[in-house]
Image (cartoon, rainbow, N blue to C red):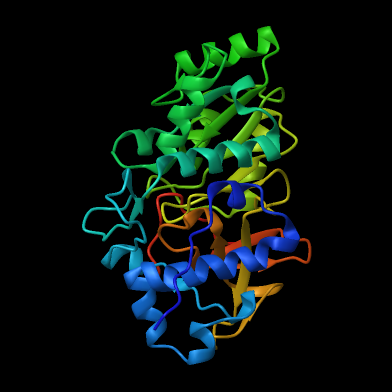
Length: 331
């Protein structure tokens, strides 16, 4: 007979101390083994030591492809919302059943607060045309919340690099408002080409990745170098997020992402699916404790490197893996 396990509370997750992370992660694992049918069935096919881990590197992450073929869900009631990934015509997309929308809000607001300060005190200029053209985007939900709760009326969405965006940028510059230009990569490149010499040195430029077949896929270094030159910027910031996660990590410079306290990244060997490490290079495996009611242990299709301080880099994608809407640039 299995022992009943209690799900962690939001207060435990978003206030987790580094010393308590492992215990909380193993509590999440025990909960999801019992209440997430897909994850429980997956674990049953694995060695016993992997089904009942005692440390993070013993955990078996769920391949991210399961979000395309099954309902990865551990909630008792119907989900508050279902986020879906983008994709080209005919591509099978992921869906993330979110039991408590308030958890997602708390996750992205707390992460931004830790990385950049109070998000409501910033102007958010969102250049996300490809995401605005469809429904179910978790990125659009986050951006809408940031725009609606910003104290600055200049905040808003822009379908393309046009005069309306330039006017909002100029208003923010003249008023001395802390401003974030949040943009998909191809739209930022469009802005750079349409308005060469545009000085955006006063604001934070944050790219979310994603060419969506609109352009040749540059490396991240090439993209950032082009944007820095075009906009007179010292650095380009990046967001690492995906439909299957309720948390995001941010890179302020150099392509090294810093996860929030309730998120950790491991790497596994490309040859051995059970060989996980806390540092080194390999396939990135995400532990996102905010995913209590879906699955907190996900093996991505991203290849990267995790550093001793917990930061990580994304170096590319596995061969034959689908290109996500927030596509990652191959270095």
